[in-house]
Length: 89
Image 1 (cartoon, helix red, strand yellow):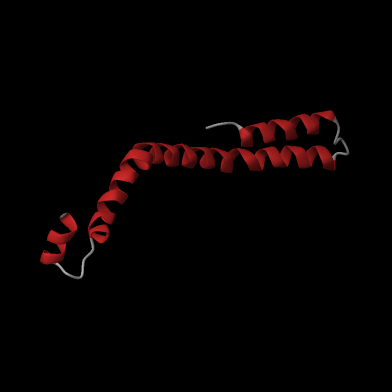
Image 2: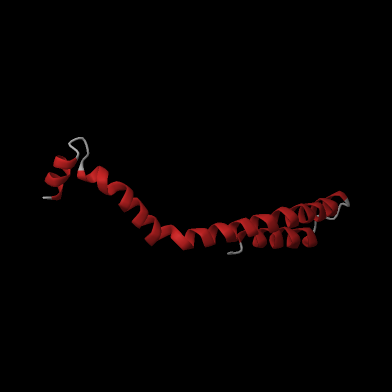
């Protein structure tokens, strides 16, 4: 019935064309809306923190290697850097 009324109003428009923007908005609100914005905010904060912390950690590890001491301490620091990168936000 709705399809028939819509055809009378606008013969070139289908019911699915009419519903598509509303369905997209509804899907966004239900599945992505506030959660997506929160995840984006958290990811941006994590990326900013990482961009500050990672060069220092790399410098420390490279310093250990340059001093000829790539032993357990450098491995521990690499593991700590890896854990920092993999930690849930």
